[in-house]
Amino acid sequence: MSHLTYAEAIVVGLFQGVTELFPVSSLGHSVLIPALVGGQWARDLNVSAPKSPYLAFIVGLHVATAVALLAFFWRDWLRIIGGLLTSVRDRQVQTPDQRLAWMLILATIPVGISGLALEHLFRTVLGKPIPAAIFLTLNGVILYGGERLRRRAPAGAGAPEAAGATGPVSPAGHAGQTRTAARQAARTDLASDGRLATLGFAEATLIGSAQILALLPGISRSGVTMVAGLVRGLSHEDAARFSFLLATPVILAAGTLKIPDLTGPLGAGIGGQVLAGSLCSGIGAYLSVRYLVRYFQTRTLTPFAIYCTVAGLASLAHLTLT
Image 1 (cartoon, rainbow, N blue to C red):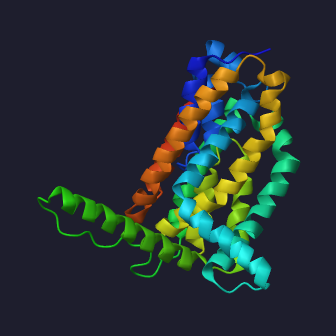
Image 2 (spheres, rainbow, N blue to C red):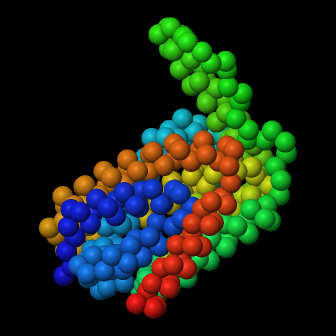
Image 3 (cartoon, rainbow, N blue to C red):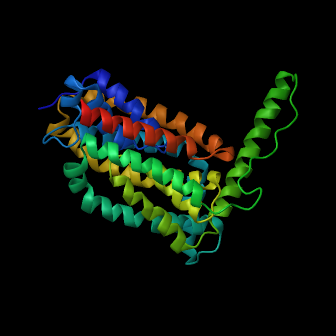
């Protein structure tokens, strides 16, 4: 049976937490990094190997990633869950929170069904380094193509609010600025959720269905959903926000389904490694989403497209020529 060292768990945990939210494919990196390092790493960290705890480990890390997303978007989820409850109680879908709640449910159903039906097939057939390198390259093409094909959002949509004047301030002034920044962030979040709620249910379901492509190692869940949102006319900020909200229930469910594997024979002797990897994954995910929601207020997917294309082609060359 394969083993999992603390060094492997920590490195994989960090990469999983970061690459799950950056549009560069966590599964692709989880397959490619061990293969490129080689040696014991390639033997221990093989998602397609029979009776290996590695797949259960990396998918189990999704729980930590989902917790990080819930911690960051907790205000949004309180509103969304409240909207769902009032919608069921009143038998209506009128408010933005009610619409957003049902949009997220409908948009999650296709990938949930596909994951249950296809995950094992994709893992055993395609969860290998060369297919992962090919799909990572394709992910870069998708990201770049999305930028080229996207509908331009209306001027000012998703734009951050103007910053206040800067200069020396007292401690009381710092506290006031912090409260003001928090209120501005809350207003920005509400405005973004309001814009997302104007999507049609069919459009939201189409965007959510793009997550099915992320079952392929090398295709990014956040990347393809952002591209789908951009093509439907969302701004980068709103597309990223919708992508992260969509990802939360999916990765939480995927991680929860793997917990029995980690507590059973496959997880024997690696409990400490699982905890260490989960901690690193959660921290990496929280810092990543905090950075990305700001990044996409003013920037695009193009740098990630370049990275994926170069990294995928370089990995493919290394794996086939050495």
